[in-house]
Image (cartoon, rainbow, N blue to C red; front, side, top):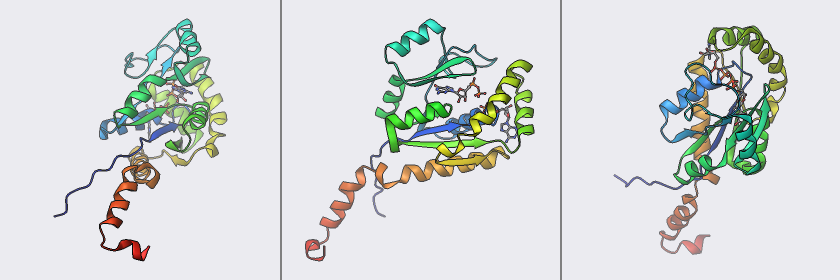
Length: 220
Ligand SMILES: Nc1nc2c(ncn2[C@@H]2O[C@H](COP(=O)(O)OP(=O)(O)O)[C@@H](O)[C@H]2O)c(=O)[nH]1
Ligand SMILES: Nc1ncnc2c1ncn2[C@@H]1O[C@H](COP(=O)(O)OP(=O)(O)O)[C@@H](O)[C@H]1O
């Protein structure tokens, strides 16, 4: 049997965005559970933690002064105001993960997706998750039981604006059935990992294959 070939590749910066409540956190957690080669970019935020959220695991919860200092010190790859709070992607962890050969998952909004694309261009894969209906979106926000009526109203108000940026993404999925949507996300990640431009090792591999053919130069 032929020896298996393992080739180096460039990491994927995998962005999941959606209006609040469409299911991106659920799908992110399923991905992180299922695939040890991708790790979450842990954002810093000034929003207070929800029940069950752990500092340093789901977010770095910081006060506004700390956030402003981090931004002034250039610690963020991107940051934005969302729902009256600040959210930002610390640069250091992303660099560490990529250096360790991991892909990186970003749960960030459209502003973050745009900024990240400006920084990292084609290494970024942008996926937008839509709810099946706006009624279902509101139902999901309520069923999560993490937000007050006021916060839910604000999130619903912002949802149309978030959705209006759907065409700035490479892939757009409808999260009707969560398993189905998760399968689609996994298919995208698998195909993106296989793209030629990410398979750095292919250049040498193809060259060596050609060279291994006697008198190959004659036929080129
Ligand atoms: N630009 C940017 N957006 C972020 C970041 N972290 C989280 N977000 C976005 O901020 C919004 C609010 O997040 P959150 O309060 O956790 O509520 P969620 O929408 O229910 O996940 C979501 O659209 C997140 O994707 C970040 O580091 N940068
Ligand atoms: N396909 C789905 N069908 C029904 N409920 C869902 C589906 N996907 C997610 N949910 C539920 O909807 C709520 C919001 O999902 P969440 O992942 O927190 O959304 P987001 O991170 O986009 O705000 C959660 O209670 C989650 O369990």
